[in-house]
Picture 1 (spheres, rainbow, N blue to C red):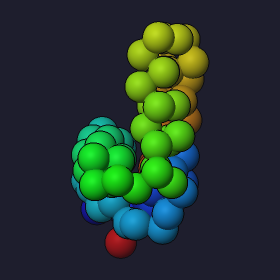
Picture 2 (cartoon, helix red, strand yellow; picture 1 turned 135 degrees about the vertical axis):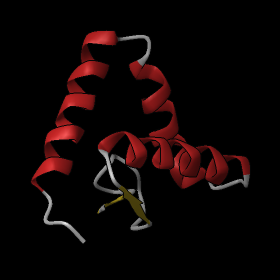
Picture 3 (spheres, rainbow, N blue to C red; picture 1 turned 45 degrees about the vertical axis):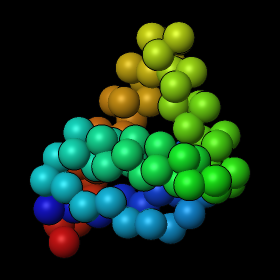
Length: 78
């Protein structure tokens, strides 16, 4: 189990996301961004738009995904 913050994943806050894999942490960040913006948190809106925009630029999206996986793998286990 490892932890990455919203900020480490491109967001504006320090909320911690825990997961056994990078994919779990990425999914948690996605849910967090959607919930924050739905709740009226404009600070998270840019990060959510950036995340959605990655699907329009697949090469950049894959690059970011691989970087998060490397960053996650380099973390000491919780």
